Image (cartoon, helix red, strand yellow):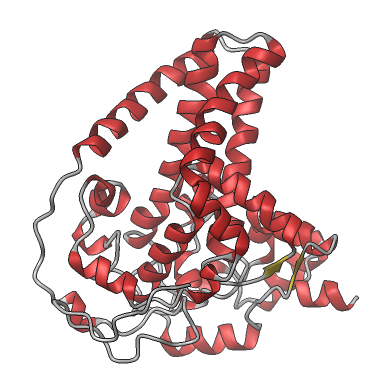
Length: 358
């Protein structure tokens, strides 16, 4: 059973309407933004772990370019893609924002891939990410971008959670996660499953199936692949909260950053924080067609494993951008009918609702 939530946490000032149906919506937390910065207690194990990962990854790049078999490099990318989908489609869009529903086989696959990505279990990932959205860029945000680029990128994992973050997490409704048997199974067995899926399997498979060296198998599809994966997710928390435009809501710190999208395939962050229940990465069909997570969800919907995909209508997007945006919506080309029609004619682009009713 889920624990009882303390309705009045101590030590931090919260808004009164913390419990709402829209778990992903960012709220007005101007009071929290004025909170006095806290000194952090460092977690030295994590610091040395991250140093090892990044130094080991540099060696992994060298091995990938000089001695690894091509199968090993392809295998590393395939594992990376599975982990990215497990986190992006699974712990993010399915379990955090509930932007679509999934049948049990798909939920199990996403859980396995998410475990392989080693970014905490689904329960903790979703709790922290809901806290991030609700109290974005305040002291109750686990990776508060107001504390600087390094802190929001990886520094937040190098120190213990502040009392504001802990108490903010207690204010989040997690009853849906407690009721999900796949989530609870993973939570119970995470520390047994994660080492096998994230570190043992990617190392053993290349040695067993195509006679790769243990050194290459460990440093490329395991260490290099894992380090790239976590830095890609971190970059959305840091760079996409610092650089770019805010065409949908200028009061939100997250930005639209095409550079982050090119590296992470997740860079339309002002759109995501404005409409967190939308399963798509952006309103632009072409970019969605180039985003593996969105392509995967669409494919699963086509075979009936995903359903009730939520998206925002163009009229609502336009009204919101005109009402709260920073005036840069036209820079992305979506306010130009000539561009839109040309895109549709060249790529046959239609939205999901049109495809579903066709």
